[in-house]
Image 1 (cartoon, rainbow over the protein chains, first blue to last red):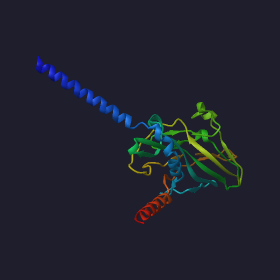
Image 2: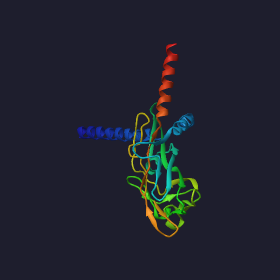
Image 3: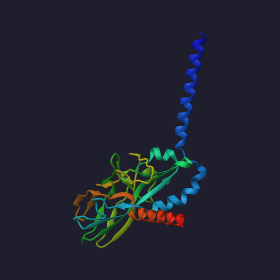
Image 4: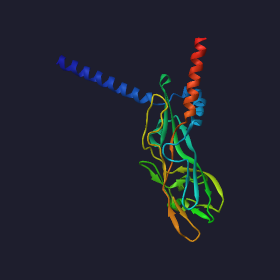
Length: 199
Length: 43
């Protein structure tokens, strides 16, 4: 009987240890609010250096109908909220500051582009019949001024009309974003699969 | 991306963005800062 009690006590002790260590592991991914402000400027500086890299794709694309499409810069969102990290897409960088038990998540949520109509005809981009895709994500583009509830709604997604010679610079966002992948890195690392596709 | 012309004709275009990542400038600046830090430490 005494042996059974000892075994029971050992099992309970092990269970307590396992649950406490699991809790610690989860907690270690939560940002420490005490250090959020301290690293904000550092991350802001970093974000200025996150750009489109020319790895095979061109920064400026000339379409055969005369439309010029230029990628200016990615639009980034920074979050220290682990829940955002779990739900959002396109983690570009995870900035772990291990000594302070603090993570910062930098995500690409869209891009700034410039369109130029070099043809002699008016061109209309019908975004409601286009798609913005990543590896596991595909949806309608989302634009400034739209209601969040209209994300991915074709009738609420505006066209872009370009008369000959007109140049338009605009932000284009993903709608209904979901997380597609994550990368943890001891230092800043380029996103492995970062190419966003318009089709 | 679907682009219409005035006569109603349209074409689909596939556009792939460049990769997103840290610019080479960042690594150069980080390297220079590290060199300067090491130099000042040596001094």
